[in-house]
Length: 95
Image 1 (cartoon, rainbow, N blue to C red):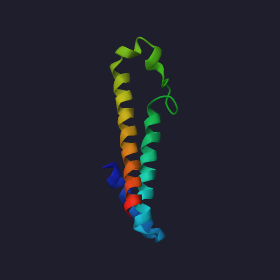
Image 2: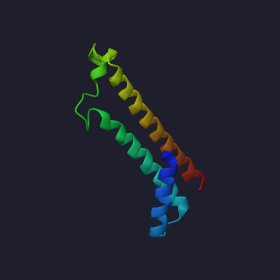
Image 3: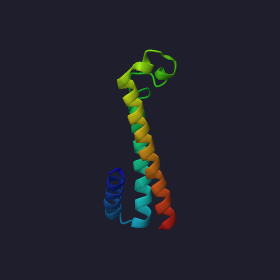
Image 4: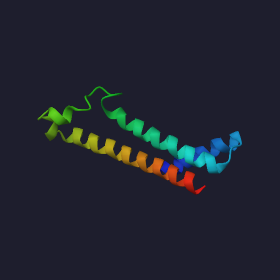
């Protein structure tokens, strides 16, 4: 779904700017992947109020189910973001 949104927005912007789809699709995937990786920082630390390293040294945090789910969802955003960047590299190479 993230790749479809990234490619769709890239094609739409590329259409209005008059750029070639072979260039706008990889750039859209790069931007979408980077955006997802930045969004993964939003849960804690940089944009939020919690400490990003709390789970490493706080014994109570290792049993905190909500915090563990938050870390798992952050990891999912990073993985999907990396996959989008990888697709961008693949399409950049192919096109």
